[in-house]
Image (cartoon, rainbow, N blue to C red):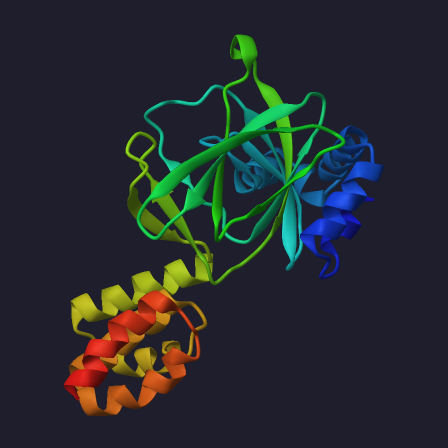
Length: 257
């Protein structure tokens, strides 16, 4: 069963090998059947809420199953809107075909720019592994403007962010926290800072230990504003995150101390 592929810490190569032995169309249909039997689908109100929670109308994606390790989803590979941006996918992804093969365009990721690479055909015999830290993928337009259904297994990296790139210039234009908790903590810290809440530094002292670099950095900034000397004691802690961008931000503060 396809669910078993995200029940343990299996490598992307192992998952891709197993996909080749399965009828993925039948497997996906079975997952959809399981969705319909969930208690949350029993009543109209809870069913609507569940559908909203597992679907993304902007990307045409439906989440079928998830664990703490990863998730399984299906998407529509419709012709692209030339104005829509390109989004990176944190972690490892294994793309697989369902009813028909589909084409994927690959881009090499650099810090502030994408580099267009090759296009690859994904079919039942050839699932495709994407390392999100190095490669961004996009569904290539189908022939005769057809819409095709695609499958994807994501192995999550909650500490990585979603990078947003302009489709024409291929330049990075924004980033989004992948982890929802990180996004909430960032907003909370910014609100405390804006309101000049006297308890903000206490919250920052807790969140400076957060594993997400953006949250730890924001908490550190708030502590640095209150007591720069004391805040610098947290630098070794932040260095343990081994995030190049964070290290670059910390270096001038260390040198000025």
